[in-house]
Image 1 (spheres, rainbow, N blue to C red):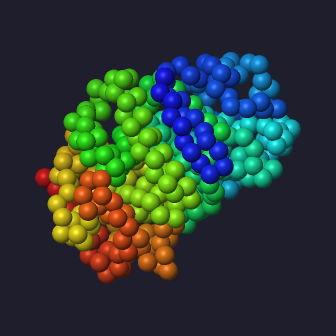
Image 2 (image 1 turned 90 degrees about the vertical axis):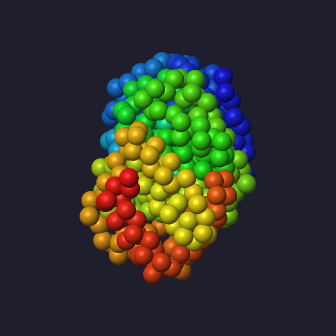
Length: 359
């Protein structure tokens, strides 16, 4: 089994990556807990909730099912989870398990961080995308004005990643998760990027999937250990997200997947980087890979001024100026402040390029 250790300021926590872990959750609990509340969504519950409950048969276990999709990252669902925890009699020695994708992890994690000022929390990701969000301790809910604007840093006690749960993912969800792996490769490992660019997502094996996820988690954890609270290098993990988050807010959470819009955001970051640093990046290679693997690259007609307004709501914005993660080369990220005038020019030319189909 692949076991990684992530060093946070408050604790060191393990990340377990293997098949069938959901059947043996008790083996991986790092502490004794008075009660356990499993938070999952309406899709995942049908597939894996009973397996996890059976793997915790020697504990007092409660469950709560929330809606699937970004709509669950709301203040109403957050309050609902708190109400469930109170009703079940959870105390400060209790545990909340997030069984699901990144949305479940974010919502349950923020509830765990704030219930009685913080209770035990374990991530059990069931999507490829959640390999990124489950490591690093960021938990949050959305505001109608922007994504993840209400949240905290709250590292889990452990991450238990049963990769067998990934077999029920749709092709769209596989694409979404692999966009984050591509992001991590671009940030830190040019060879890993080349490896991914040669991978057809339709022919992934379990071994390849485990190797890719382990590499991605290792890159993420290395960055997080250097900068847990995003004051410096952790900001690099937002590569592709400045535009991606803006598009999510404009197009409606859940209509496109997070990773699909991050893929477009990565292309945009490359184009801006090329112009800012007079460099040549593998834009065409990434575009071709995204297209060949079924990523949607045709956006509806959008006003660049509206996109810019959303980008300025991003948490990384400073004094109303947009801060973007750019690349001098693969493996060489930089933070840069990009002026409104430049961004409008870049957005106009980029949107036109996408509309015409780059090839």
